[in-house]
Image 1 (cartoon, rainbow, N blue to C red):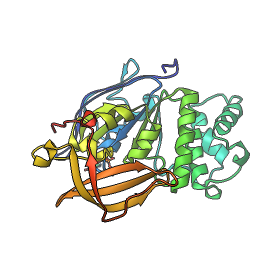
Image 2: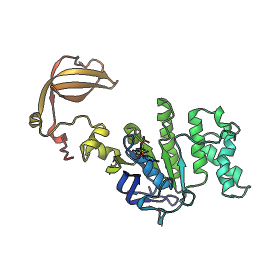
Image 3: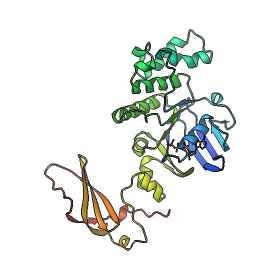
Image 4: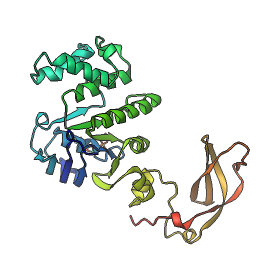
Length: 316
Ligand SMILES: Nc1ncnc2c1ncn2[C@@H]1O[C@H](COP(=O)(O)OP(=O)(O)OP(=O)(O)O)[C@@H](O)[C@H]1O
């Protein structure tokens, strides 16, 4: 995965408070060169603040941030070699796509003979060279997103930072754009940090995910690690592990739960049942669906058998 263009990002003991509120509480993380790494957490968990610390926006945190070999904690954004794509894209409305993308090179005083070639390469990379003469208002949301990406990668950052880049797009386009971002990231082998509150988005795009809650790093791992072995109830809940039972509940001693189907969702290849096993406990059960296979109806009496090999004990 490592590439000579990619840097690691190391975060050590990072804390930040706004007034008297602690927003980040002692975060330690190492992001490998060339990795697509996601900060995942609910609204207010501190993921954007953490990303902004890496970018160099906002107040200086306590602790240290290293990009590659260099400590950047006290450097301004433009000296960190990072490129950030914002939720709003932040394109200049009065400039053409070409000028929006060329601007960063002009600002860095790249020789003017070199600029057209690099703009064409960056716009080609995101499939937009044909639209170079348009203005942002003449583009769809997905196209604007691609311009924002081209504008960021053209200056060859060592780390790409994406703050909820897909949140302004409709559901289909989000799925398409996340594939495109992943392909682009793989092509460029660029260390990338992606921020989202959407666990499906995180699971489909990430090499590894850091789950945050209330400014505390809850767990770091691959999507599968987090789903299969959550360290606490919060991670299990947030990553969508289906069934959580309280250990103090006497029902937990059982491996077979009689109950009634309370709800049924048809999901194509799967049918998802909610089975009420006592007054305040319901279990989610997925069953494969094939034409001709019998499905249960709401109200049916069923028994849910739990395979103890797949039970995880959570302490938190
Ligand atoms: N400039 C600020 N001044 C004061 N408090 C702030 C500031 N920016 C963020 N916060 C607070 O810090 C906490 C973390 O915010 P942050 O934006 O990092 O969360 P987030 O996980 O990215 O949430 P979201 O998905 O809603 O953007 C929140 O409680 C927020 O209200």
